[in-house]
Length: 122
Length: 107
Image (tube, each protein chain N blue to C red):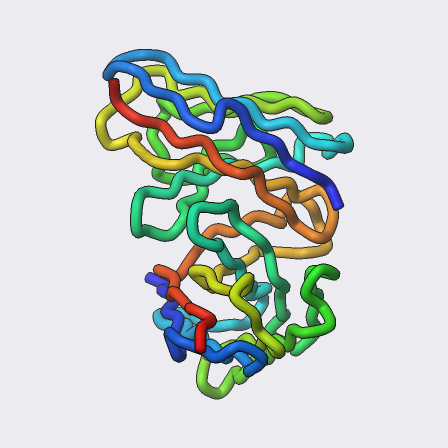
């Protein structure tokens, strides 16, 4: 079955750029939207943004100035870059699959990675 | 942005009890609401979408209802494996937003 796995540094210094990759195995990126979601310790979930397999993106306005999500269909991967990080960006970062974006009936996350903790600290 | 508010923040109940969790949206979202279960150290799992549709493989003791601004998740007979945090998510408009979560424990 399709599985998602996040990878990347667990520690990032303040003001630097956080970079994570999600590898999709057992299936294709095609025809789905792929999201990043984060959860600060002890807090609720926050949607960061999504990318369609074709490359079109949509970001949360609260993070839009600092976020870039990209896709590499040849490697079956998509990636997150978050610039100018601060301690407030410390969180477990999840990648997840979104069946659709144009129809509200499809805007739910049906497949998730296990998550990776990223700590922002000097 | 649409704010999602869950209550209570935590609930403790006995095995076999009926548990109800509420989610309120700051603006009407029709029936575009999902519920997730998150066990400690694990990724969230989709339980219900479109307010009341059960995701494949989810036990029938879970059910969802509501429309507009007020929604509920009900566990009809609480089981030990249901210990988790439950979160709602609105799908009506971007940015997608989540509730703060409700922690369910066994008494």
